[in-house]
Image (cartoon, rainbow, N blue to C red; front, top):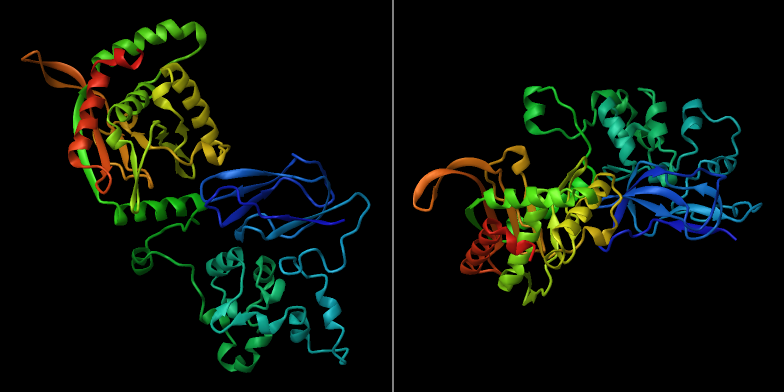
Length: 435
C-alpha cells in the first residue's frame, strides 16, 4: 500500500520550508528512523526521518524547492515489489510530465504545427493568471538573470507551471500558445525582459553587485527583529564592570579543571552571572504577554551564536542552578551543533532572557535588539585596560561595558537598573558564582 510522505512541521511556528536536499533517491529501501531529507525551516536546517519502512516509489518535490507548505506530499513510499498507483499518490503536487502525452492524443489532427506541438503538453490556460505567471522560484531566478519574459515561456509543470527545464529549453522568438494572439507585439520577448529585483542604488547607478537569495533563517531574523524594534519600547542601561577578579578566578578554576578537559570561558561565567542576577531580581525575569505578565521562577539563558545562515540562540536551561563547568560543557556542544544546523527546536526556542557577547571581536559597547517574546537581552563588550578609580586612587583595571536592553512594557527602568547593579556585583565579586 502506497504511503504519502508529507512536508513535516519541524517547529511549532513552521508553516512552510525549503526542501534543501534529498538524502535518498527513487528505488531506495528505507526503514523507520532513516534520514530522508534536509529541510530548511524558519529557524535552522534539520534532518527529516522516515516513520515507515518501504521503497521510495516517487519523489514529487525536487530538492531546492522553496515555500513548500507543511502537509504537502513530497514523496510516495511503496512496499517492496509494489508499483505506484496509476495517477500517482498526490496528483495536486506530483509532476505530470508522463501523463501529458496521453492528453495530447485527443486532437484529431495527427500533424499539428511544429511550434504548437512543442507546447502542447503544457496546459496553456493555467500557464498564466492575469498578469501573474505560474513559475517555480528557481525558474523565476533563472529567467530574471537571463532577461527572459516568463509570459513567453510555455510551462510543462503541474497546471502549466513554468519550471527550470522550460527556461533552459526556451528559444527567443518561440511564443507560448496563450500569447499567440498577441504575436505581433510579442515577436521579440527579449525586448521586454523581467529583470530580477535589484536594490535601487545598484539599479540606478550600475554598481557591480551579486544578488543572493535570502535563506528562511535570514527572512525570519529580518521579520522578528523588525517587529521587535517596531513593537517593543526598548530602554538601554549601561554599566562599566571590572573584570580583574573574574579573570583571576577563571585562571584558577581552569587550572583545577585541566585534568577533566574542561576550559571555562569568560562568556560561560557571564551566562551564570546573568542567570543568577535574574533570580535575585525576579522583576526582570518576566515576559510581556498582552494583558498578562509572565513571571519565571527559572532563568533559561539564550546565547547568541553566529552561524553561516545568520544568528541562532541556543538555550542553557536553568543556568542559575548549574555549575559553571556544566554550563561550559553544554555551551560548547550547543554552539557546535548550531553551526552544523543540528539543533532540535526545543534547544533554541524559549529562554527567559538573552546574552550577546561581541567583546571577542573588539566591540567596546553596543545595544542589542530584544529577542521577542523575551523582555531583556544583555550586550557584552570587550574587556580592555582603562584608567579606573580603585580605592580612591586612579589606576589601571581591565574593564568591560555591559548594556541591558529592556522591554519597558514589562520592566521599569528602576528594576532594570537593579538588575545591572546586581550583575556588576556578581562579576566583580565572582566567588558568589561558584558558591
